Structure formats: C-alpha cells, structure tokens
Length: 241
Ligand code: SAH
Image 1 (tube, rainbow, N blue to C red):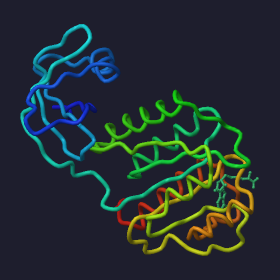
Image 2 (cartoon, rainbow, N blue to C red; image 1 turned 90 degrees about the vertical axis):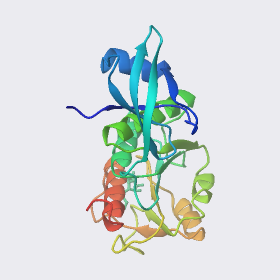
Image 3 (cartoon, protein in one colour; image 1 turned 60 degrees about the horizontal axis):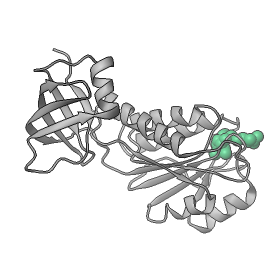
Image 4 (cartoon, protein in one colour; image 1 turned 120 degrees about the vertical axis):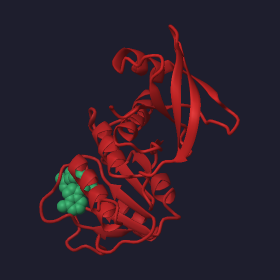
C-alpha cells in the first residue's frame, strides 16, 4: 500500500471530527493525486500533529474527510534552524526554500540588501510558502517552515536576536570566525544574494552577535551556499544521521 497522501488544512480543534478541504489543496488532491472516496489520508494543521482521516465525500469544489486519529509527527527537527537568505532572481529562491525544508529548516526569511537585484511581492511570497508546504509533505514533515520577507536587511538581522548560534556566510572573509563543528542549540544562518554583501552589512550583523563563516576559497553561487550551510548545520545538529 502506498503512503497515505498528506494535506495541509487550517487548525484542527480537539472536537473536530469532520473536515472540508477546498482551494489549492483540493485541486491538488482531485486533479493531480486523484484521491477517491474511502481513501485514507493524513491531515496536517501546522501544529506538529498528524491526523489520520478517511475521505467520505468528494464534490466539485471540496472534499469531506472524517478524522480517525491523531499523533505527534515524528519527523520534525529537534533543534530550530532559521535560514535568512537574500532574494534571488528567477525561481532560485524557490529552490532554496524546497531544499531547506527537506533539510529540516524551521523558519525562512528572505531579505532585500544593498547588492540584491531581485524583488519580492505578495504573490512571490505566497509561492514560496506553497513550495515549503509541498516540500514538507513530500519529505513527511508535519510542519512547513513559514517564509517571510524583510524589505530591510537590518530588520532581517534583528529578527534573529534570540538564536544561540548566529552564522553569517561571508564571501570576502579570509578566515572563519566560527565553524559548523559540534553545534548545539538554535541556529540562524545568513546567506547573501547573487550580489553578495557589503562590508557595512557584515559589520552590522557582527554588532548583533553574528560570526562570519567562510565556505572555502571558491565563490559559491548563492543557492549552492544556502543549501550547503543548511546541510552543514543540520548535520552538526544531528539531523542528518
Ligand atoms: N557577488 C559576490 C558573490 C556572492 S555569492 C562576489 O562576486 O564576490 C552569494 C552568497 O553566497 C554570498 O553573499 C555568501 O553569503 C555566500 N557565499 C558564496 N561563496 C562563499 C564562500 N566562499 N564563503 C562564504 N560565503 C560564500
């Protein structure tokens, strides 16, 4: 039997036993996954719980499912990783969001910065959140990281105040001030856009407790750097073992 299909739904309360799925998730269920009445599915409400359910009715614009049980999802990361990355051109930010979600990132901030030439709008941000939800379902997570946008780089840096490890991938740093060995605790990772960072942006982040990390003597593309730091942090925190 194949793994039950997974769907994100609004928050489910303890007394709910019947749920309707409409909109984007319904269209996906009906036209792409071709679910049928009687099928067992899993509902995710973003709380970390997973609800088993059975589809009782499929109509033109919605389906009805009956909840049969609830468990706590077992695939969520133990430690919080927050990725802050510059907005990239084309659909490259989507690639980062997809891979970061698979690697166990819990929160994603996309920022504008001095040398950033990509733009974001509501539609693009919603698209990023959709990519995060799809990736979360595919890799069996019960939560999708929320993508948010910071028009101002300083606001992005300030949003990371409460994290234990603050790492800044800096392409013009000769020597790392911090490494990925033996990390413990919540971790925030900053990676620039195609244009990279200005020295004053790096200094500003340092004044907020960030330490610079070098990813070696070659300059990586922004998306390579972002995926690499997520993988290194996730590995060090024990999430890839
Ligand atoms: N335009 C810049 C390169 C930007 S690369 C230049 O020509 O120098 C995009 C981002 O990836 C950088 O801002 C940094 O966060 C990260 N990055 C790429 N290579 C890196 C390296 N060797 N060390 C640390 N960070 C790197």
